[in-house]
Length: 170
Image (tube, rainbow, N blue to C red; front, side):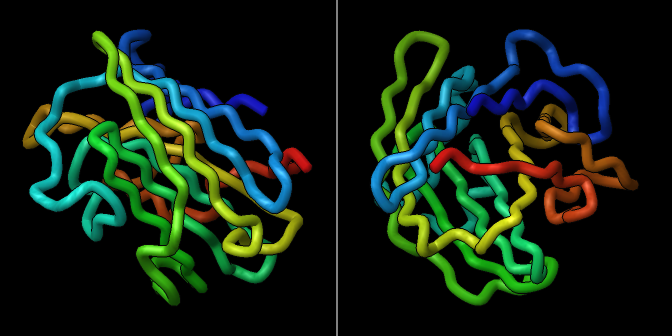
């Protein structure tokens, strides 16, 4: 299953040079997420590679998976090897953070690719809805891109009503 992050957060078409893609596939007991995204060369977090709180403040690709009961998993993947997995119940109500993720990333030229593997037990039960985002830049040049636009007065990736139905690969 492929997901294109090809809109701005408010529904405008993204520049072709900004489009990121996720491929979701199944492995035994695991959801595999492959990233292919432009590398914007934003500074890396000043933290060791691995789980990184506040990763959303850096260059990142994010996948949100929502279950029917308001529980959702947020998976953040950065081009420098940092990642963050959160479980939430209700908008922005974190119930678990910095959960385990098998993650490998490679930057080559103007693109980065990554493979993440997350245990299905960390995902909400189905039926599910999803949205995906890519963020890069800083200050006035900060860009917020979305698979499904989440319009409002400002970028807000926890607008669960913007998520689209999905059946994950088995």
